[in-house]
Length: 180
Image: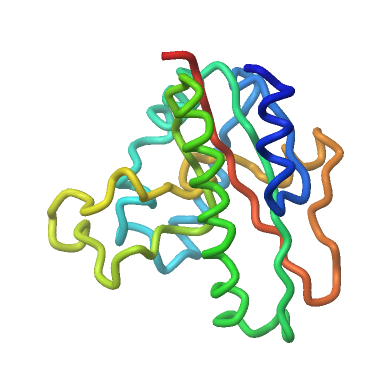
């Protein structure tokens, strides 16, 4: 990747921190998938979540089929960190940012696979529930956790911020990429 060109691109956007990762070093953990299954109301209800994204082994294989990844965060501020509706409303700006990073890489000759925040909410009712294919597979980004990625581990290993405190939210995404 032309890092100077990428730096120029990414500096135009409100990305808080980013790191370029070797995709082979990204680990997946069953414990993350277990949290999805036991605690997330979206489990088995969208194309962006398990089990629709595939087995953990399939997810790891998909991640490792790419050579590199851009792992990044953006910041959002809310009036009340405990207001889940307000907090989730800030996610859309991060998702747009994630799509822009993916498009930049695609326009520069890379094939991408995007993992982002939470589960997809493009459609009010996911086609998964109806047993139909995703209506927007080019816009839907599975969540990092659906693939067993331990965000806090990457953040720690890369010396990134995980919690800014106050009424501030850090959203994280990963765009895996490889040459076409």
